[in-house]
Every structure is written in C-alpha cells, then in structure tokens.
Length: 435
Image 1 (tube, one colour):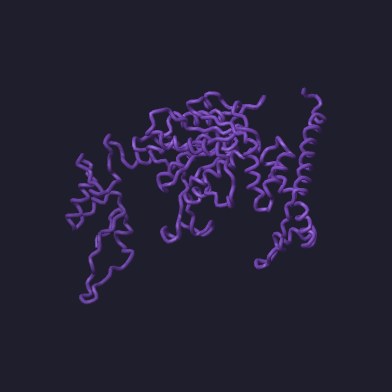
Image 2 (tube, rainbow, N blue to C red):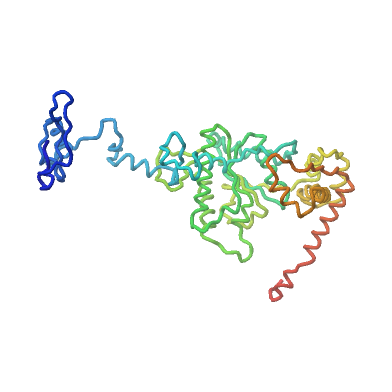
C-alpha cells in the first residue's frame, strides 16, 4: 500500500488495517491513497488506466475523449451549438413544476405532504377542457344559431383546402340572458367538440403579459386536444367585452393591449403560436377556431373585430325560438305547449333567462317548508354539513308546476325589475355627480 507523502501523519500512521487473504494470510493490494489535487503524481499499476486518463485530461492540446459514442450530452447541432441546450430553449413547457409519481420516482423525492401522485399536466388538462357531462336532457337548439357555429368550425378546419380567407374568430353578441353561451355549449356537445373555455376574468392579471401568455397557452392546449386525442376543439372566451370593452372613462391597461394584440396575431398567424420559447421550423400548431361572446362588440378595439379577423353574428331569438326553448325547459314538468305560449305572451320582450327564473322562483315555498321539516334554520347547518356519512338528507319534494304559480312568480320578477329601474339610490348617495 502506498500512502500520500503530502501529509506527514498519513505517511507514518495508517488509518486502517489492510485486509488479509483468507488462505495465504497476505495483505491484499489496494489502490494508492492520495489527497493531492494532482493524481498523476502517484504511480498507477494499471497502464490502461494511465493511458485513458492522459487522453481525457490531456492538457497538451490532444483530442478530448467523449463520454460515449451514443451519448447526446455532448452532441452538437448542424450549427455547432450544444444540442440539448437548443432543445431546452425551444421547449414549449415553461413551467418549472414537474409531476411525481410513486413507484417511478424515488420515494425520497416524491414526498407525502401533497400526496403520492401529483400529475400536474393531467390536472391542468382536466381543468381547462370541458366535456359537458352535466348537460342532461333534451334541449332545443335554434337552427340559425347552430348553422352559424357549425359553419364557422367547419370552415376553420377546412381552411387549408379553401381558396379564400377564413376569419379565425366568431363573435356572437346580443342582449343579456339570450342563451349565447348555453346554446354554444349544446352545439359543442352535439358535435363532440371538447373546447377550452375562458372567461373575461382571466383577461387581467397583476403581472404584465400574463393574460396574453395564458391565451396562447390555452390555444396550444386546444391544438394538443386535436393532435393527441383526435377530437375537435376550439377556444371560447365568454363575455369578452367585459374584459376588453371600453365603457365611459374605464382605464386601459397594458394587459388589455397585450390581449388585443395576441388575438390579432392569432388571427394573422393561427399556426405559429409561441408561449416564450425560441421558434423552430417543426413547431406547427393546428388551426383552432375561436368563438367569443359579448353584449356589445362596439366597445372592443376596432381592428380586432374587422371582417378579415372576426365574423360577427347578432343573436336575437324570435318568438318561435323562445317558445321552443321554453317548452323544452318545462316539458318534463308536464306543461303543455299552449300553456308555454300563454306564459311567453303574458311576459313579452323578456330574455330567455327570465323564463328559467320563473321555474326557480316556484321552488321557494317548497324549500322553505323543507327547512322547517328538518328542524328550522337553527338546524340547517348541522343537517347540511355535519351529518354522519351514512345519514341521508330528508327527502325534498319538488313543487308541481302550474300556470298559476308560474304567472305569480313572473309578476313578482317584473316588480323587482321595475323597482331597480325606478329606485336609483345611487343618485341619493352621489348627489354631486351629473346624470
């Protein structure tokens, strides 16, 4: 055994005894011990190791030995740059959080605080896309509305075959409560479309640029649904004028400008969408149709809603559409078509959600009776939230829908509408403001 000479203590006193051969009782050979930074100062009995080290750590300008002929750690691209570094710059996943699955990753790194399995990508996909299992029942879809939405989706998926300019965005606008979003979701369900749905509340953030990046990310997510799942998809933004519209003296923010610019860029370049990574030629995104809803598109930046980028569709259901939609709503309650026509004619010029509110208002008395049956308001919290696992709530019997009860609810709602319009308490609170 050869000890290091750079430390006098090690040179005189071995720190451990050497092992002996079980038969010959002679000491077994062990590699040299050295604490020096230059291992070449200690001779090695293996000449092949010396030659390998001299090739790897050759300071005289010799060729540096690669880790392996099949290794990509030191691979170069066609331009001579590091290949793995270039892949990292071009990656579209900018999220530093990674998933961890028990059994595939060492338990030391999986942890137990947030659960054994944390597939972040799966959770994100489940939150973003919509599948509409909750839409149970036979609902009526207005033919004009369906033709417009279906035609827009089909044109965008056939845009590469058509010799014409196809607008990427369909803007559906009209009065409040006319069923723009609900009718669109019914069409998605009928067509088997799995859309990515956003709201106007996601168009603003405390960080500049975040909503624009979110729109591009959601657009690419819809593209991945088409590519990976083989399903049609689209990007839908509800109430876009609430997030981008200009009303009176509302403030224009940087994020508003970035969102408008992002949507305009999507219209002009629907297959080249970046979320921060470097461009690469093979990164081609599927063209995804975009559908937005709003009440007044005239409040949005004019170049965004021009004809080449957005196709506008004003939705105002006619009398026949309203009767058919409301009849399907009350059909399961045993209401006849003539009774539905009488209700619609009694309350004309009302939005579709008004007739849904009629049915909801008729449940008030039955719910009040149910609360009394379970012990009153004092026991309501315990019955709803603190009951045992196997305990069931008392049976709730829904009220029978009659035309008299619905008319009574309708007059009550009309009275509330008139009070809001006539009793404007804001004028009393802010008398110094002009009308």
